[in-house]
Amino acid sequence: MAAKVAEVAPGIYELFLPLPMRPTIVNVYLIDCHGAWALIDTGMNTADSFATLNEAFEEIGLNIKDLDVVIGTHHHVDHFGTSATIKQHSNATTMLHKLEQERVNRMLTLGPPSANPDAMAFFVTHGFPVDKYPIEGMRPVWMGTNQYNPLPVPDKYLADGDIIPVGDRKLEVIWTPGHAPGHCVIYLREEKVLIVGDHLLPKITPHVGIYPSSPANPLGDFIASQLKVQKFDVELVLPAHGGVYSDHRHRANQLIEHHRYREAEMLDIIKRRPHCAFEVADEIFGSEERPMFHVMAATFETLAHLELACIEGRARKSVNDSGRTLFQTV
Ligand SMILES: [Zn+2]
Image: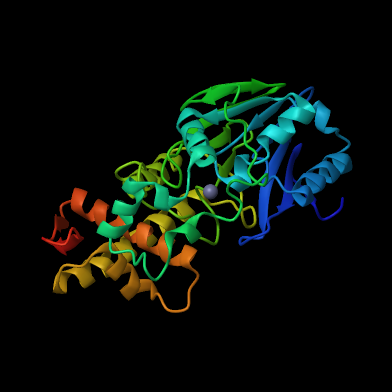
């Protein structure tokens, strides 16, 4: 079998689809349900990715028309961005969590940040230097292009605890908010396989940040979701980026530990004097010579830590005379 496809468990295929950004590959999973086929995640809607998907199907002896079910773990461009294109070619039943559908619609209709006073106020109160980094540049390049072509309305919504029968398999939905508010992982209980999207990546920590209109405590949600998946009996973990692995409990603990370590670093900084989120991010990650996208991600990931520290009673926040939101240890 060529390098684009790996059969990682009997009838479960990992397909490697190209991304025009880092990480450079997204893994999607095609499941032979014996009489029906399910695809978990779609890749990005580029010609390259769609061609690769079709080639991979061909290697397995499948035509895209034969696809019955498409499930998106979350709304991001590399996960659900080809769902409308795949739907056109297959008429498969598409599924996504309802909270992710709201994000899809937001992404499809969002104007430039400068046209959104709430977004501007949010950036300013958290100290993001909008003079140095004009926020027009914050729109990801794929936004408003055909590279993001998700179905604005999936055929069905995923909900926590759902068991979706496809052929002779049962796909169980575990809602894992954090990286995205409606992120779900898919559990094959009999096979002890967990398809984790971006929730439990083997090498990298998924981005968890606070943005205008995002949930109040996404990092708290993320940590709770790490504890939640540990209850399931799993022998094979299938992530969207990086290689497959086996010990999901160990990896979940590492991710929780990583966030605790970061929080301790941040509390140390705001012990000396109150800081805004941008200043804390700047001390930890540095802001020199980095693409704006990274500076922004670091700032709003830091904000997620600081808000969690407030909720847990380790920090408090106040707004100063110039409208800046400052955090300080209690
Ligand atoms: Zn993602």
